[in-house]
Length: 325
Length: 187
Image (cartoon, rainbow over all chains, first blue to last red; front, side, top):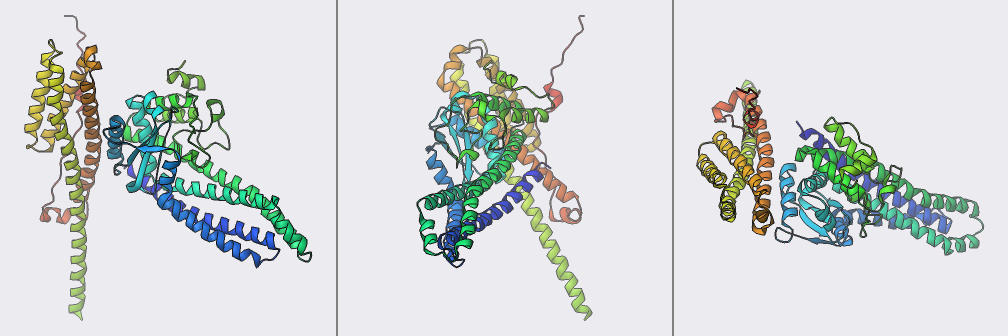
């Protein structure tokens, strides 16, 4: 049965979401503790900051679970549409919601000429799909079906929940690390260090540790986000074909979006992993790399071609597929 | 003592039976619900077709046959609705293929292709047809699940007693009838 793969994916996403929330709490708590110790020079000085950071992490996780979708949509400037204002888009979303056997999600439009799309929400009952006006203009019906199928696969697989929490993890660590670096440079730690010569050795170690943590933590968090989300993109592409029974629409959509040179202005570092294709980088920079949230478009097209038993294409041939040669 | 053992066995058996029965009812309801979903969309398609026929009638002096085909196929599909899933599926497939030829003919008329009313109707019929085909996949998978459940142990022993019978699939167009016959003989 085709269902087994996505049930497994749902289970994995449920589990990983909980683990991730726990990691956020532990990591932020640890960072808070380190910062507290570094600032005061005593282990007991870290407990207060650890508590504050831990509570902050719990609030952040819960807040993003329940309200993260609204925040993301608002930050992207997405406006709700319905049958009257965007009939074809709404129709396609309804068709694929039936195919994926999920409730009809809310549909949003982003006023931007760069073609892209994302899905968000905590579960299929509270899901939203947003596409840009550029996507509607540049893609035909079949291609749109492929993209919406991809987004609804994220909804059905519960990738959307995990992505929301990943956003919090990355965002909150970056936030705290920024805060800490600024705090260090403004002399918050230095003042107390000069006032207490006795604990200088331990304090210096903790200070260095805090500095290293502050630098390493955001990078580690980014790497987790990237590795995880690339696997999800491949899976959502394959699931989209499973839903639409048509690999060519998605293939052409990928080629068109991949060769489009416009940059999505409303996307930022905290939301880029949500999108259908990496919204920040240009075509040349979308090539493979450790810091890419999405696999290169050429790889995605070629994985789809594997499904249909066709040979892989070179990058220039993918551009030709988009009708841009 | 023996009485309690027998009583215990009876209670366990009754509980198992209740669980089995409830499970089958749940599956059967899912089949019915999936079928109801298809029927909503089929009905919507029946309602849209007269509008489309009216919209294109004036343009199509030469292609009246396409229009009468669609109208007849629609009438056949409406009346097949009462004859069970298999008959209905066949009639609806007929309707789908006549609609396809209608849209193919529309392609030949630049005026029609530019007519907003026709475009809207075309989009609505396209989405309805897609919804029908996706609902059909869903319905067929619920039927498969239900049929398998009542034909396998343990439910197979009690399915007949409780009145659970096999359901029909809502079949896609049979492959064989979709392939045009090509005659290469020159005589």
